[in-house]
Length: 273
Image (tube, rainbow, N blue to C red; front, side, top):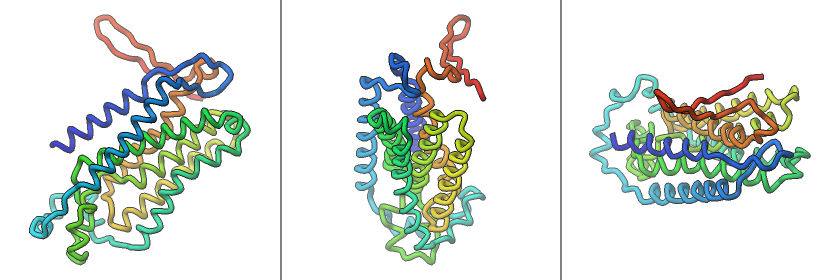
């Protein structure tokens, strides 16, 4: 119950960060930046990531009696088969895909429009990765959920009781990979809405993310549900940060309109191509 409350709280804070209005004064660029908002949000993202790292590193190991008494039957049916996965090499290769999540957006620098505004897009990149980092590290730091291999009696007990075995929720490698890959695809799409290559970017981002999810599965690090949540969190962050920074004078497809009367709320409009 405590983990679910914290999960909802973290998600709520991120939604507030995403919908904070940015400046529309710059009418020449596809994306807009308001330093008074985006720099603090990025700084909070970095702070949240570091706080999550601190919480994760200070978790206590489990005792062997607790581990032996774990019941795989209490897991979701879709999550049970992975407890028998323990591929060492899959885990190692997934680390490279984690690194790819950070590196892929750098290729945007070869785009002339991005290259002319490296400061602007560098900040968007940092904001995206900082928020994605907070999503995973803060959640994993506050929520204890055993990794699949903990339920496997063939895995050495030393590995099963380690404090790192409590970090299954949710899939951080997948979150970062998805955030970087989909950020790249979305920025390219925004800059080149008529390009025939823009859909290939989303396809490549999906393949890279799915591959890393499969590797984390084969390594026994995350349940299917953890991988799905990590994918959604990372992809949403990578897409929403550039989308919500679109210059309103350049793109009227997205609108957020508050309304009041008999009921109060916000109307979100999205015009599809």
